[in-house]
Length: 104
Length: 348
Image (tube, rainbow over all chains, first blue to last red; front, side, top):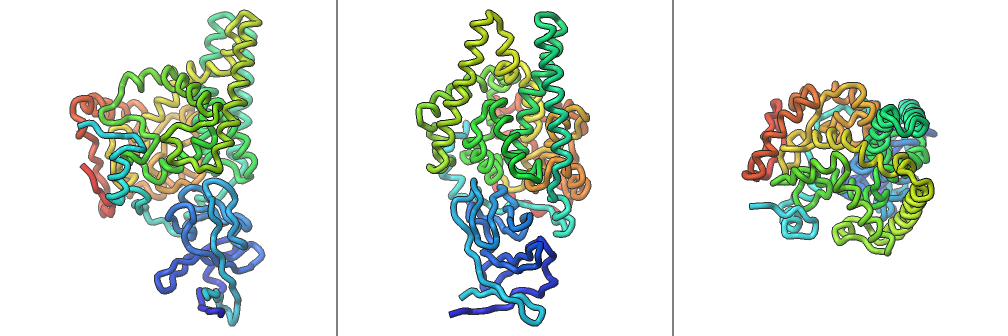
């Protein structure tokens, strides 16, 4: 059962960047790709406790600010050491200028 | 009472219990837009520096070989040694963070080459350094603490010529080549990564065996002057710069301003050291590339302790402390922080 919640406005996140989003104590990261796609993942790195929204987006990769752990934020796939566990991703949709994510 | 710095001892367990491991560390506020600029990746500065590095290695290594054996060849090898046995330390480090180049494979190539030169296994040290950044100078957790309390000054002095580090590196290579890790390495290197370490050690030992054979066949030490020995006779610079990073400062704190040191250095040392003299800045924001560290320093310096104005002044600050720590291991440099202070100090 999908549970859509509005995370941010489309202009709240720059192209090729990420912002944090918190909902009911859970941290998420909302991405805008260079081709203006919107994506969402868990907010913390799976390696150690670091907020991905403080990291660097390069094309379709988010790099963790702590140890350079790299994920494809579209699929959550880890891209080598020190990442050993993939990142959870969430479906997104854009409606009326807002980005929603499915946390269901 | 001396502390237990091993990663498998009582202090390690206590550090975890006290919340010192994987803690939240103090960070100076920097607007996201500015931080994104500072974290930005470029190939240009690292390609320029790497071409210069390789060019100087070929030039001075070539002169050393061509002029062998003379005073001039020794002078050429003195420069070559620093480029080999010290600059490789900074290249290993920066490329290990993945921040030197924008293009991934360039980081990987320089990382593996520099690891060979500095005799550090690429896999073990990648994980070791990740731990160093997670638990910086947390006793029992950080595997890269150089000046412990009390400091082993003879050991540190010997490593100005790699007299301790190089034999240890070969011992580890033999252990790894036999398909084993050291017990402490096993605490931070995952199972899936270990075969890479074993095969790296086997390849490296073959290369060093070839160098020794070349020395025997040629009846000259010259092949080892080019590969291997410069890790010893050129190590002094990376020990000098490395000692300035954390020596004499606090342990078991979660604020890099209290346990790390920024030092203003001359341009030659900054080239060899790849700007790691901005060490508080590097630990606070490890994703900022070496070429942006001066800009990061300018951005946040008002929130940091006053930097040491030179390498000499840094040594003048911490050497008396290290000497005193031989008898008083509780003694350390208690940094004054600019107001407002929002660090979390949990020790001493």
